[in-house]
Length: 400
Image (cartoon, rainbow, N blue to C red; front, side, top):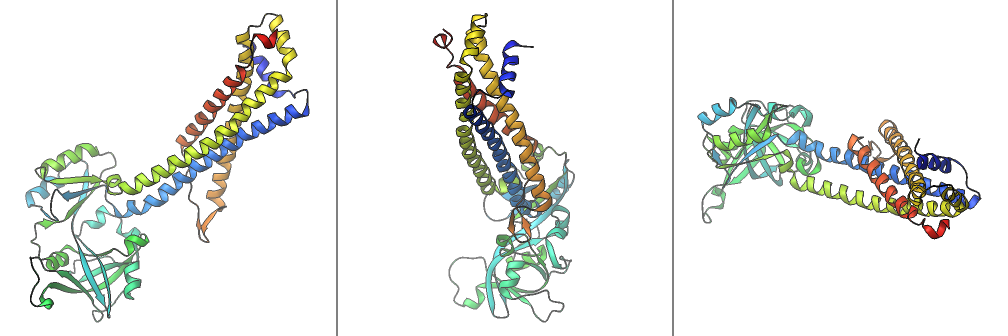
C-alpha cells in the first residue's frame, strides 16, 4: 500500500491528541456532508420543478410546429399533404387555424383565441389528458371546447342542448373603418361541449373548435392554415425531418420544436437552476474550507510525528501527500454520505410528501444520475483544492 495513503488513513480514523482538534475535524466533516446533501437536494428539487413546469407543454405543444415565414397564414396543398404523410419519422400531423376572437355568453364578454383543429389533432396531442369534463370535438362545426378559465369567467358550463350558445366574433379583413360598425365583425355561434384544463394561462387563452368553424369565421379558403402541428416517432431524426419539412414548403416556413416553442420558460428554468447551483456551491466552498483549517490543525497536532517521519527518510513531498490524502479522503467519504442522506430525503419526499406546495400537491422532485455526478465532483474538487492548500503549509522549517 502507498506509504502516504496508509498514514493518511491512520490519521483520519484515529482521534487527535486534544478534544479541540477532534471537534474541529468533526465540524469539517459535517460541513462536507451537509454541503453535498444540500447541493443534491437543490439539483433534485429543480429537476422535479422543471418536469412539473414543462409537463403542461408536453400535453399541449407538439413535437414540431410549422409557422409561416411571414404573415399569419400559408398554403397547404394536397401535394404537400401527401409528401408530409409519407415523410419518414412523422407519425401524424394536424392542420391548425388560430386567431384572436371576442367571446360573448349570456351578456358576459371575454377576449381569447380560437384554435381550429382537424380530426387528426387527437393523434398529435393527448386530448384525453387535458379534457376534464364533457367530450372532445366531433365533426360538428358548431361545437367548441373551452378552457377552464374561460368557462369560469363566462359562467359557461357544458351545454347539452343548443339553447345556450356561445357567440364568437372576429374583425372582418380589410382596411379602414366601416360606416356600419355592426358589419365590422364576422360572427358564429357554437355550443360548448367540453372543458379542458392545463394551467391558468392556457385555460384562459384558448377555445378549441373545428377547422371548418374557424375557417368560416375567418373567411379562409380550405387550403389555408396558420400552423401545422406534427407528432414524431420516438427514434426520428428531428434535424433531418426539419430540413425535409422546409424543403416541402419551398423554404417559406419556420419549424420549431417543443423547446423552441417554450424558449423563454426553458431559459428561465435553466438560469434559476444555474444560479441556485452556484449559490449552494459558494456555501459549500465556505464549508469545505473548514477542511483546510482541520488539516492545518492536524499538521500542528502531528508536528512531532511529522518530524519523526522526515528523520527516518520520508520526503517533504511524501509528508505533504499524507495530509493531502487525509483531506481528500474526508471529502470523498463526506460527499458519499451526503449523497446517501440526500437520496434518502428525496425518496421520503416522493413517498410521503414531507414538503407540500399546497395541501394536495407535494413539492416535485426527480433523482437523476447527472445530479450524483455533479455533486460528487463539485464537492471532491473543492475539497481537494482545500486539502492541497493546507498540506502546502508543510515546509523545511516545520520538519527541522
